[in-house]
Amino acid sequence: MTNESTDGAKFCPRCGKELLALRTAEQICDCGWRSKSRKKQVLVAAAIVVVCGATIAAWIYLAKNYRMYFPDKLGAHEYELRGKGAFESGDHIGGLLQLQKATTLDPNNAELRAFLARAYGTDGQYREGAQAMAEAARLAPRSHLYEVELGNLYGLSGNKEASIEHLKKAIAMAPKEVVPRENLAMAYVNSGDMENASKSLKALAEEFPQRMPFWSRWAEVLKKIGKTDEAIAVLDRGLQAMPDDAELRIQKADMLIKGGRRKEAIPLLNKAAELQPQFAETVAAMLDSASRGDKKRSYLIPLHATRGDNLYTDVLINGKVKAKLVVDSGCSTMLLSPTVGRKLSLDGSKLRVGGFRSVSGVGIATGTFLESVSVGDAKATRVEAMFFDMHDSQCDGLLGMSFLRRYQFTLDPERRQLILTDR
Image (cartoon, rainbow, N blue to C red; front, side, top):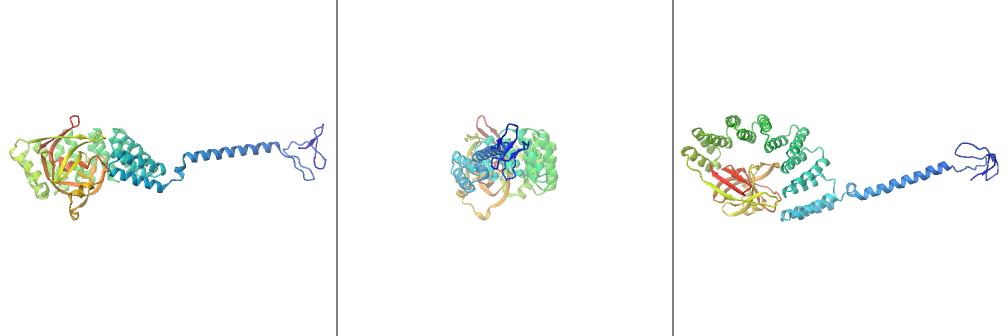
């Protein structure tokens, strides 16, 4: 501090020289002495307080969000493997817990979040699956496939509006991709919006005329809204594009038979059997019905519910392997777990790679034609099946349309019954 006189002058404490009372923050003497500024001291102290506070706040934030910036990828991978192993062994709850720990250790891993979402979906927890997939989509904003999966999970959870919204977003992200557009069409079907479903499938069929499912689904939608003649005309267009497709012929023949036009159906069925011998038994039954109109036999199949309220039945494959399959008319084929495939002791050289469609989207797997599939007293031969690991411990796969289309079927969830009637 400086010595201060009564008239306001200041004196240097070192040499005693009188200083003028300046308005500046500092006083300087010729001897080199410099006064300390109270203002400067206050500013320095304030700066120290601010820096210390910011540092403490930063450490608190990092403590709470440590793994976001310093993920433990090795630890997360270990928990991921444990989770997958638990699912395969049937422990869904344990598997989900392991996968949740994995996402905690590596929270910015979009692929890991997506796998957790699929695990929730497999367990029937569709809302939780949608939440996890939404996080995956946020972490990977350029992935249109995550948006597709998110839309499908919302659809399964009953949120039809959100399902359509995210599928439209996926199309906007990848307008040339078929998968989002196909899934949007099926979302319209599931929501009961047959008009938009018909428009979407019409656009797909006309853009990709060599893809049978688009013609087939478009015709089914038209049939559902009572436009059978238009549905038959659509199948005719499909057959013009793919004259050797047996399934379109069988589908058209079925509509003709149900409409009382049996004679028109017979040449279609004969040609279908000639093109695809594996449909011989189905064609024979339909020809018998078309030519003689015999009384059809019905089969009442009891169903059971899984923990996720999916309905399944006991199935005998190739007369020797038993399996529990969920009845799923939204799946284009039978899906079997790899475990069932190993029990069947199939010739690996006869397996082929192909695609399938389900409510969750489009997949690729290896498949073959089974010798026979028996559900109660109902039996079908040469049934297409594919082997795909769905990580479902409660059941061994899906009883899809490759079997169900052999019959007229009615699913009664309230009574837990499946009624199959010979075509």
